[in-house]
Image (cartoon, rainbow, N blue to C red; front, side, top):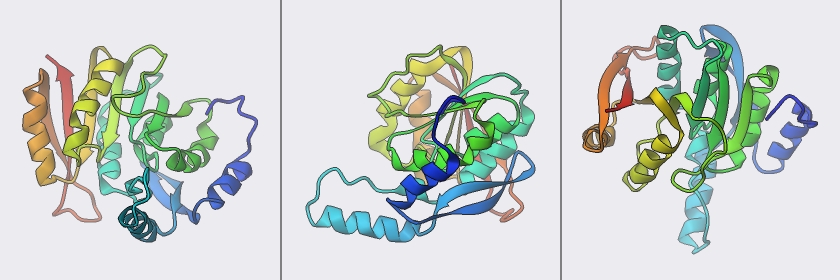
Length: 230
């Protein structure tokens, strides 16, 4: 989205409502009370997608983007450590857009992306009040290459859960990371992300791990994986 986009937030909402039920969810973003446009029945959407896949329908994508993941909140908390004023930031697999919106709230210029179009309808609404700092567009790992200067900072929350996407994610990071830039990927210490940690280091990335506690469940912190090209 850019500031000259003629569509209003109400029109984006109407488009989203034609596809699925959604609502505004109060959310703490960058330490402030905010709200995110989110799908109202993510479990039902996933069941429907599975049933369509079982029936042989092609091209049906699991709507994991519809859920609100704690990993995005953990990444939001980690961003408190950075000075993001006017920093160009790319969010991959943005889902609800929480992490990208947290960066924009802290003064960054953010491009929020996902591989499917449906979540971007909601993200356009959630970022509408920061339209001058937020651009929303589709980006598929390993397929699309943005025509834009590379980004000093790339964010992703819960984007490492599928092994088959790791090579495409690696390529996407290399395609869009500026020289000397860093990548921040968050997850709730999934076992598969432990495998990703080992896998990505073998491909020339320097790796540093951070643990971020959240007040809603202090016993289950969020991991932030900090990556830099060696």
